[in-house]
Length: 429
Image (cartoon, rainbow, N blue to C red; front, top):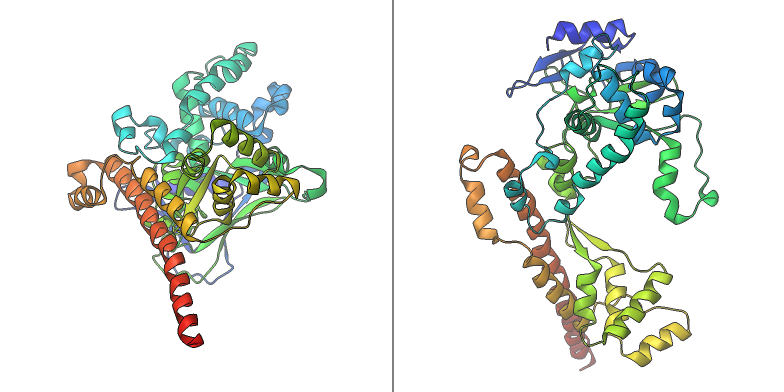
């Protein structure tokens, strides 16, 4: 799409455009936004009126089918995008024409390609089957009930996946202006539901032209009641590409949602460890009944998660240490915890170390390749292994690197304690 078409759409929809920004093409041929002159910090680069943002409330679909407002934000936005993307005269026609029609998100990977991510928990988060169930049971049912409105609209499963992929990759959740979170009016379990009430899921036209990078971020979107603005967060030199920070999101999750990631997001990588693995190692000397009883107790006390994230520094969350202590304890000790309505403290002792090291080894066995094999693959040319396989290798190698750091952390516990003990003995002598 030409720069003239994009700028024309922005101006036609009352978008305020700073004179020092322009659209240009990256070396790979995609449209991006860059600066032509030096731009100081806190400068508004774009100001997009609320009426130009893609939401269900801005679409003529809501006017034709008022019951759309009763649907969840995710459902209503997908229906809106499917409807508007099929309208030749949609006010967002130019924006839809700028969006990709081919995707590298995990939803579109083949089984052989996904096998390259074996060992990463992201494979279990793709949600393709769940999405297609939603399409069959909710989206298609709504469309069939309003067949006259959707006449001529592409309502195929492929169109549904395309709309969902656009939303996954490019939507934003903006807090509703004037909405105050009432923490006392909700339970901890209601976080997801509550967030859907105090935020709006929207598509910001041509926001996809702003690149993502944690380290290079030089602007950010700032929503208000009347508009969404793109504002510089630092001085931007001439000829600089505009970047926003994608947030503390692992490369694996960006791959799932966007189909690509900046290497700077490696600092936010995590590896997930299932609680079932930890319990199987820490409680291997317990009977099935004893393990089940302790699991039930921990669930009742809200002390048990399905899985735990180990971040890039390899640090062990205290919740894992408490979980281990709860399952290595003998029956008398555990019953004393129950009687006193307390749970063990997080300990960094030799027994905990041995459990964590065994967990690490078993978690490492979930990967089909060694570090050396992955490094050798990345040493080959990108064309030799393909872009998708290259990203899969980087993701799994990053997760295995966290396991290595995790191992170093737990080994230092006892080594540090032994050094302190020897030092104390020398001082005593």
